[in-house]
Image (cartoon, rainbow over all chains, first blue to last red; front, side, top):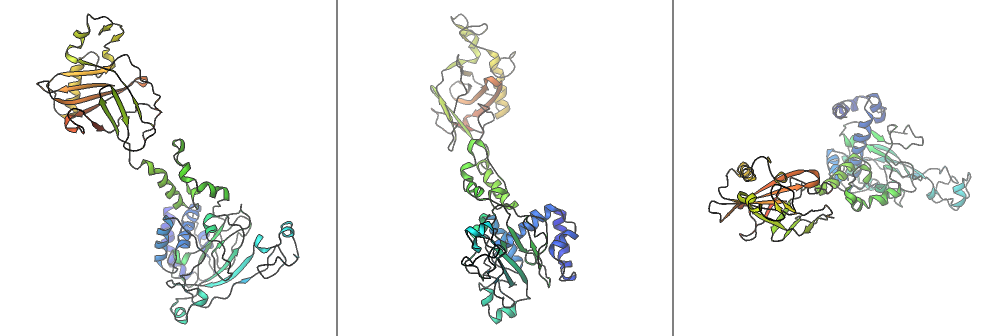
Amino acid sequence: MIADILRFNARSRELAGSLGDTLTLGEYLERGNYSRQFVEHYIRADGACHLVGRSVGDARTFRRGSRRFLRPPRLSCRWTTARCGRPSRAVRASTCAHCCGSRNSSCGSRRPSNPSSACRTRCACAAHAVTWRATITCSSPVTRRRPWRCSKRDRRRARGPRCLSVRRQRGSAAHRRERAAAPPARPRRRGNYHLLADRQEPVALTYDMNVLQSLDARCAFWYRSNNRKGHRRAQGAAGRSPTTTPCTPPRAVVAQARHRELNGAHRTYFCGAYWRSGFHEDGVVSAQAALGPFRRGPRPCRAASTPGGLGTGATRRCRNAFRYRLCLLYLDLAEVRRRLEGRWFWSARRFSLARWHREDHLGDPQRSLDAEVRELVQSRTGQRPPGRFACSRRRACWVTGSTR
Amino acid sequence: MSFYYCFDAKDRELEAVVAEINNTPWGERHCYVLPRAHNEGTAAKLRFASARISTFQPFLPWT
């Protein structure tokens, strides 16, 4: 993967100007034997960065797009910042394959020439896939003018025409981001994504690789991720690739909205690209969200000894805090055995109602507890306590683990 | 849980507290040595804070 990235970045610029206009990016990737991971997880993600970028034409696009992508990305089909190199021809509607063949977008009034079952009931191009073909010319960025409204000065500044054959299919958006950028009502607007009528179909995206990789090429290199139903070979200037773009069905979109609610329930955290648009940056973002509760590290535990009580809790909200009462016996370690001998129900040697059990405490049972504690304190603090030791220990109490 | 109170040579001032933690069913034992210098409370009411090095209940999370 890394080797492919380095190889692509190093060679693509050199080859872009020498290979001519006939080679597409898809062919270039296939010829170069680039790995599938590289195509799916690098080229496509680059394209996503490009899609969210507002300007077109230089390296700033990629950086800006990258930053925007790390935030909640918005794929927009309106490249309002693009500047055209030549007047863009108007978008014209092509024949709807499912309906009546009208060149208008609203053909519901006409009788379908080859009606399908869907056409009989709805008979509207909006319910099917209406293909729009547009010739787009764009180059460097900056202004917010639409390409068909650019001035002559802008055209002169343009470095060269870059053409894109855009197919935009109207229908139900299967992708959240694309849904946000729903097909505009005005057909003259450009788009570089495909919205498919079938929700099960993946969304296809078209990326301008000249912008992504800053290719100084005379021709435009486009990368288009196709859907599964045919269209293996992209038409026009777009490259070809058998890859598909991840699809997010509507139920998944509903689940994505509950990300915060689901994360952390039952101490289970979810992360993955499926929480957002399906790109690997989305996986990183969701991983950061999953790791959020762990960023502070282990929670400090605070314990306090109060007369007759022991509490533990946390510095922040904790569902596992507990508090219970204790009864501790206060003894001098130097005379613990002498104090307990000769008393009823108390013993330091044999079984009794209350027994001093040396094995329950620190260190070697063969040594005195007093010496063990002194050595422990000396090893931790560097100073050996000179005085006496008092021990408050449990007395015939069992603390259960039911702390929830 | 057992507490060991370490006094000075005159047996008046408390020098340190050793908190011994036993999670009985699992047989683990850890000791927290809490010097007086780390006391966050008052002389009459000691209060120490320490990073947890043992789990009281293995089924409870550390978070």
